Length: 212
Figure 1 (cartoon, rainbow, N blue to C red):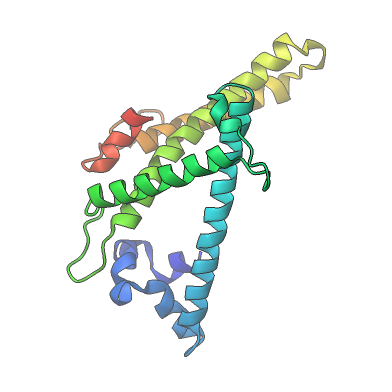
Figure 2: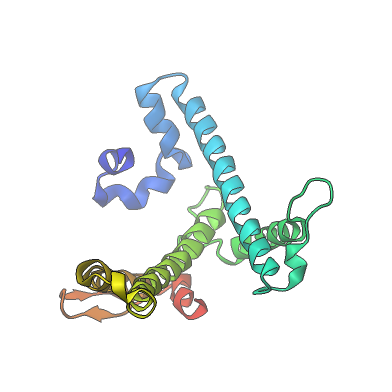
């Protein structure tokens, strides 16, 4: 919200290179001179650690649960005898995350956003955008499937509770709403009803849809 007002849409492309790559620090110093930049650094580090922790916890527990019911190899269901944590899932997630971050960081160092001369590598940003685009498409499919599952479940398993509005109209509207979102993530398509034409990706993002 703050960034959108500080950097009007026409300037958003310059956001990451503004103030020698420290746009957040500049805005903070304008509000709290002397300590604003330091507070922003602390906030970003704290937020990054919290997000990394929650993401790792969700991923490892999901691997553990799927291994326990044998949707994945039972190896993932192993529990540490002392700490009672899903030890194999934790190791797998940590190693996979390091490999993905390093390899993609090198491959995507200048794609889709080229690193400006004199600035640090944009590899981390590009990996974030690449994986975020893939996740966006995955979530679109998940939301569509959940809506369709709602219709099927109440029609087949609990028909006595079936409500035309809640269990048919609302899920169908949810599916319809997700279709333009999915097409926007894929790129290179036209949505005639909305009179929208999306240019195809000309960078690494063109591989996200085929991978998903």
